[in-house]
Length: 434
Image (cartoon, rainbow, N blue to C red; front, side, top):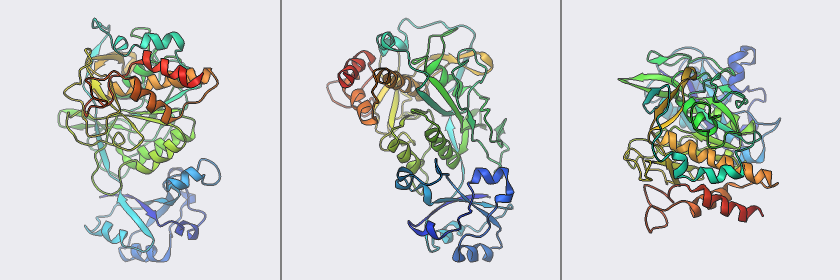
């Protein structure tokens, strides 16, 4: 049983559609905006099945009209169809929907899972002899900058512990896009139906990631860029899957979170999550294309099953896909490599902030990704201090040419261009901005 569909109309046809179609999120709060008619062939199809629906826009433009970047990413062509009641639909419904004139693509909204690495609760850290910071030469970069509050790093995840002492004063523009109303929520834990600006983290994953990026260093090491601001965007709820707790959400709501982050000033987006491709268009493809066109840097975990399985958005062009290494710089067994790995970073037994103002250890490419994300935050901050702005192309060039290779090859399938080296990265960065 599905209650929402996302469709894309053919280019140009959107100009013939009603002008008063609301953004789907606005409709949820105000049903007076409801539009129930789309175009004749579509309306006839739904009437045949005795289905009542609301027609909404999947995205809203940043400004009053669609920008050239939004149009290039085809965001203006996408609509969300919300069924007004619960129906048991015939098995060929989607196939028939796709065959309608002017429908370029149609898919049912589904709940997808993103594994949450196991956390080990701890009150006080016992650090390994060689810290993650040493492995990536973080101290060198932090002599030059510890980041700027003007650099906003969006963390699309399970939310954040809003009152954690390590993140106090660093949170800006929080948002919660989790809404699974109408789907089976039996196995979910906690908040699954509210849109608001309180993305409280119920399982700790997003808080752990955020601490790696920007913690103050009260009861843990400072984050990689402790003076940057965190924009926590909750796109994953918590769900039981057997003995495990996984992050779960709706791809299209994650997409909405990505666009919201871009339109609200994110400089970098960290996505320590990965979705498998199960048919139709590639997950997040259009909205990631939009983000990159706006020079927002996307950093994503490569996955944690140690296989060549592709996880998205890490496997999308332009995304910086990150694998994990241990404290000796060796690629971990769990690090997936289906995405074209850009670089690797520490991801084993990482100590960071957790729920309820506590701390924990965790391992995964989810932990490696924020090390890279925070490093890019430092690079963007330093460039801005010098009156410069870094392009995504420049950032990728620096990472590719300064990371420590694991062998004599330029690039390795599992390690990409190697372990990030911020000492060398900042030397090359200085060359670009002077």
